Image (cartoon, rainbow, N blue to C red; front, side, top):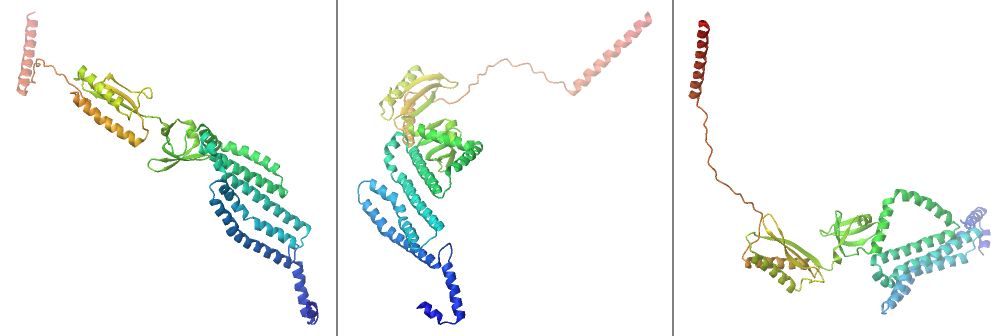
Length: 411
């Protein structure tokens, strides 16, 4: 009917319609514009279905899994929720390739796209499964450490990404072997210029394997940092100082320097040296020593031997004092509680020394003075005395010269 209607039109109109029909049939990429419109419509419909599918099926599965007590179904839903949204797109691409007629080259490209989408969905699911089922590594967390288990999880996820990318490249005919060889050469060059990076990486692995520290622990590295560990990364560790400032410390600092982990103390030490006056008698010294020991041994806040060392002794004779050495440990390692025990102990020490009838010594210096006969004081001569003395000396000198002359004349 359409052809009959066209034949009744003028020749110029028929020529224009034939020209347009030729362009329509020619199309692009080996498909007519009609095929392109049909394929585009199918893909758009697949995207609409994907939204509906995500809102209904995926949410329904998530609600059903949330009502159970086990964690397996929750992990399964977390794993497949996002990859399931790829299913309508894959079905749409497959349907579009079956509805329209494609040449061999274009059909081969569409087949590779479909296979790539399937491979991407599979490895995406595996990547999410590693994270979703990480709760199964609870036993390893107690055996190794939570940080190293997190590293293992991330490493497995990276392996899934790498293998998935290699599989997709193989689908498109790209050989992975030469790429790996090139990356190996490139890696040698990078390793020579990034020695510090690999040093920090290896140090981080050693930190986790040796379990030197974990998140939330209080550590101190001499000359580097002191604070609470927040996160152990591949290259550096985040330590939060007590003034709440974050410090990113290269992992090599923890292997090259001694790390003090205060959170793993079994007891907290008190080491004091107190000095009393030299006027203190031996009975007072013994009283002070015995009273301090009695206080420490009867106080439940302090650890007793053999659990921890505890002693009180007269230790040394200082310049201005007789010194006691007090060495003991509290059972608590909490800083605020330890400070409270120290304060109570200090007040008790003051009370004990006062009851003993002596006092605490402080730096002092004694100056001994010896009285002697005063020396003879010689005053300097006055001006008139000096002039008189000079004249006397001058007169004596003149008399001597005259006497000499007279003696010479007689001879």
